[in-house]
Image (cartoon, rainbow, N blue to C red):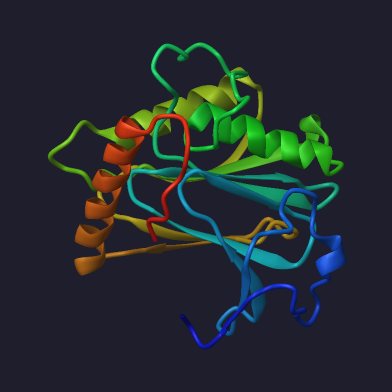
Length: 219
């Protein structure tokens, strides 16, 4: 465990625990000394929404994250999904009940709904998308499937796409600041590539063996 990790309910300068949105009270936070900001790390199958000055961070291989924000009201969040949609539901955006946000269609709906519930408006939403790298070279290009899905979703739902850094062959670390809308992306190389690919293979196997219940931490 990092020396900088702090479990809740400890408070941080500029961060108000009472302002955490309903449904996210359990999320663990730590202080990032480099960015000097409270940080939430999300894993595959998770999403997070905030109205405060904090950072949402994740690491992506073939997975995709969408950073969605109501710029007018300064409410934003990020998701992280590994597969576009469950088999047999490729034309449905709304079958979200009872599943975690591990699939793209669930992840997008749940993230957007959480932003709207927090006071955001759909007409003011801006989207930035990241990930979808071809890090599993010996397998079907899941990354491209994720990219195709999220682009199709954004077009179908008539959302505003403001930025995209997707595809290629490398993993990415993504840091999103929901209040300002700023995103930092760092390419990951060398041994991290192999480690991430191995973890994604294990995660895919877990989804195949347990397609509905449970999640697994990868990073």
